[in-house]
Each structure stands twice: as structure tokens, then as C-alpha cells.
Length: 185
Image (tube, rainbow, N blue to C red; front, side, top):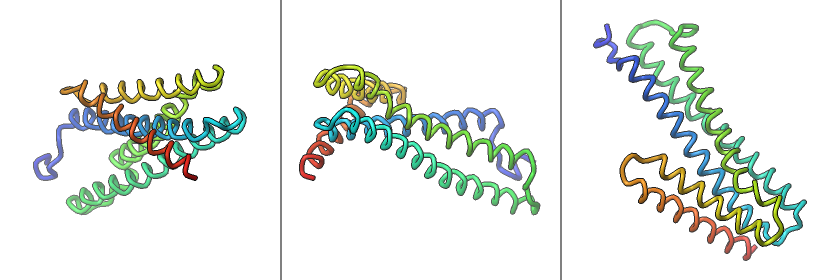
């Protein structure tokens, strides 16, 4: 029956599902850190209260939009996979363990995307609002770049240092571009 449906080993499915959740955590963390880094640079000259509002509002918005996008992307992808199975079986899978497991996978991925974006966005803020200017800005930038480097180290089993530098370099590029755009506007 397995060959007929061309299903992978159930143990592999679980292993693959963990990697898919990890992918959303890495994407969310990177998005959150880069978003926070941009907000940090644009709001350097703002009063602390205005910077807090921009930071919290921006990071929460990023987390919600990341979750929203993950939900629709994952839902449509998983529904397409279920549809293929249903066509092979000539039967609806609605209400079955397979459909419930699929719904759970979608919810877990959405939660991973949103929570990691929120965490990644708030990490650089941890010192920003406790320290005086300019130490807070420098510490926020350094913490954001360290977070990107660590994210890069986690993502690869080979060439970890290279990937960490790529993540950090990309973050610095985004930071510079955000700062320039913020100064122009």
C-alpha cells in the first residue's frame, strides 16, 4: 500500500517536519532581527518613548504578518498534498488523523514563524531601553549582528563560519540601506 501511495517512512516524515519548523524559526528570527535593526537605526534621533512605540509596533506587526503569510502558504501547500492523496484514495480525508496532523503541522509552523519573528525583533531591544544613548544603540546593533551570526551558525552543518559571515554581512547591508533611506526621508 505504501508503494501505491508513494509515502515516505513515517519516521522520516517526523524528522522532515522538525526541519520545516526550524526553517520557519530561522526565517522568523532573521526577519525580526533585521526589522529591529532597521527600526533601531531609523529611530536613533527619536525620543525614547517614540522609539519604543515604533519598535514594539513594528516588531509586533512583523510577527503578525509573518504568521499570516506562513498560515496561507502552509495551508495551501498542505491542502494540495492532501488533495493528491485524496485523488489516489478516491476518498475524502476530512476528519481523519492525516487531516488533523496536517492542521497541527500548519499551526506549529505559523506559531514558529510568528514567535521567532517577535523574539528576533525584541532581542536587540533588550539593552536598548536600559542603557543611555549612544551605548544603547551600539549594543542593540552588536546584539542584532551577533544574533544573525548565531542564526547563520545554526543553519548550516557545513561552512558554518562562512554562512555566519553571510548572515552578518547581509544584516550590515540591510542596516546601512535602512539608515540611508531613513536619512533621506
